[in-house]
Structures are given as C-alpha cells and as structure tokens.
Image (cartoon, rainbow, N blue to C red; front, side, top):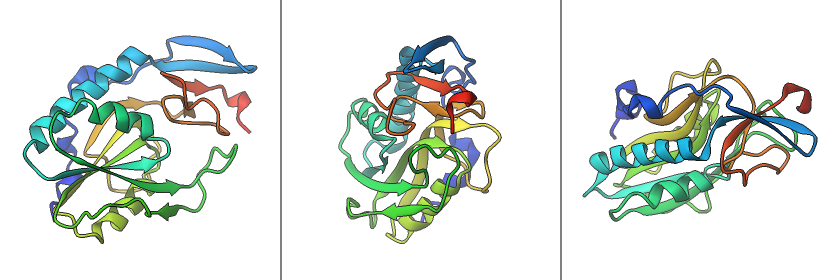
Length: 206
C-alpha cells in the first residue's frame, strides 16, 4: 500500500490554482444572497492544473478515479475529460448532511457502484474537504479493497474545519469557513447546477 496520500508535499498545484479567493460577486437567487467565491473560469483553470499534475503522476499506470457522490459528479466529469490516458471510473456514496442541515451527522457509505480496486492505483475524488471525517472514513473503507496505492483529491479545502490528521493529497482551492454551493454542491437540493462556487448568507441557513 502506498502511504504517500498523507504527505502534504503531494498538494503541488501551481499557486494560482491553490489560492484563497475572496468573494467577487454578490447576487440574489430565490430571495437568498449568494457571494461568488470562485468563478467558472477560475474553477476550470484549477481543474486544468490538477489534470496536468495527475497526468504526470499516473500516465501509464492502472488508475481508477473514484468519485464521491453526489457533489463530485461535475468535478469528476470535467477532470477526466482532461486526462488523456486510459483510466477506470467508479462511484461511491458518502453522506452526512440531510435536507437543510449545515452541520454533518452520522456518515453513511454506500459502495454498490464500486469497481474492483485490488492492485490498482486509486484516486479518491471529492468536492470539498471540511472536517475531514468523510475523507477519513472513505480512505479506511477503500483500503479494505487492497488497492496498490490510494490518494485523494478535492476541489475545495475549507480552512479551519479540519478534525482529523489526514489531508487531501491534491486540492484546487482553499476557501474560508463559509457554507458553499454550486458546481455540484447543494443546499436543500438547490444550486448544484451553478457553474461557479458561491457562499450562502448566514441568514439564509437554517
């Protein structure tokens, strides 16, 4: 088993793709205030940088990209379109938020869509690194499948929320501790379709 996933040295994207981006735009949607943290252009640039790093790391190796449902679906699709080499794709579901909840509850993992991972290099792909509880549990779960190596990548790393020792091996952006939606992330089943990442006003949460 490759243990390099815990080494922060593997978070090696260009600085422009790993920066903290302040709110740029504020707008109303269904009477809620959203502040754009990452524009569509910035997101795509970050994903492009990540794809280049993964190409250098994994080209010629038996890679399986394992997307965490459902928030990572758009991220997964955009990323693998930029990875011009053979790979397999699998899905695993981990959920700890329900409805309008903004705090995580008990984690549930469903792996019916899990392909054979034994002996393969696995990249676990999630939308956001928050407390780290989800990533920690998923890593333990996937390790039981005996992959050759296991690393993780997230689109967003939320600052100041981490409660576990494990960290993502790759990330695109670090963001402040705010509740975010868009680009696959939802609030009460809304906002997933937005092409950017935005923060919901605290008054609209609850």
